[in-house]
Length: 416
Ligand SMILES: Cc1ncc(COP(=O)(O)O)c(C=O)c1O
Image 1 (cartoon, rainbow, N blue to C red):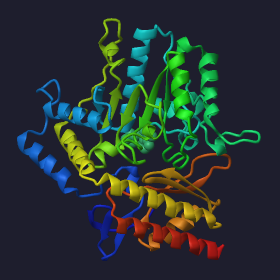
Image 2 (image 1 turned 180 degrees about the vertical axis):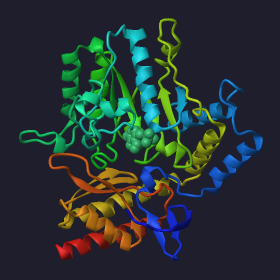
Image 3 (image 1 turned 30 degrees about the vertical axis):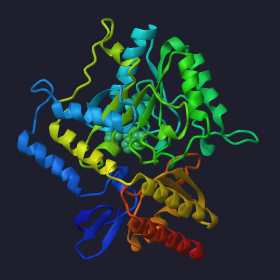
Image 4 (image 1 turned 45 degrees about the vertical axis):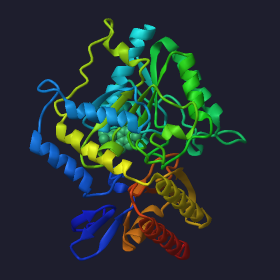
């Protein structure tokens, strides 16, 4: 881990005590989506601070939280949704799981509330979410896994071997088989990252896959939950990653990193209007979904500032910049150290030949760019860089980033 003495930060840049500046090539932990020290976020927090700093829902009417929920739903094009706020992505997933179980118990009289996840997934660091997800590096011991585990292979090559063909939409049929094996009356939801985050390094599902997942689930009265903790609010270009494909809209959706954008811990669970009323149905189980800090006014103020930043972006230029970033990175795949480049918008995985990850991180650091690594999928595991600059990086920033990474990769090519 680099040991820079950071004295200040602005946008995607960290300024060090020795006068150097370093570019944040992965937006911190894929969360500094609108860069650091945003004046818009600061103004919102200061404004709220001068009014009052705490007003949980049981204390005063949560006006600012209601404003945030409304604004968020409109920002992702689901204006009729109901929303629950939480303090982080993990708790968002936990609340979504609870809501899905409750909804399907009332609506479909389910016997069990199984949640199906993929072999290559991360959904948070609580006992439940670690036990459910398929991130091999973070799986608990079998005896600590609450009897849970991932349930189906994702449609990505290293984890999913086919004879003579690559992954396609029909990979979703393995979800159908797993639901049928357990009995649909025992399955509440399929929980899935619509575009893979840091576990496998930005894998994008094949055309038609997410639509087929939605159809399979609908046909069996199973809900679809999209974990958009990392991808939500334009990381992949669109407001939600699922919008890259028709017919892929989920029943519930969790956002987090893109909403708090590192200024605050936050999670938001969006629930479609057709099912949300069931949560308050007389037969519904009690649902203690709120935590002490989950409706904090300063948290809501920071998120409103983040939405202000996102809404002030020139979307045409932003989309073009993401495309250019992707083209420059894909060109790296011609170089020997690089095995594959994949991704969308401002989220890419640059997979490397084994053993080159840490040398490349060092070379990039020498050129003034920091990256987050992935060491996730397959046997042996693949490794590489997650390239995910802040969404409001400029053209010059992106040029700097791509020149640095391509120079760093070329050095390894020459050394190799
Ligand atoms: C896809 C996904 N889900 C859930 C989480 C958990 O979010 P948090 O770390 O805010 O609890 C993460 C965090 O990296 C994530 O990438």
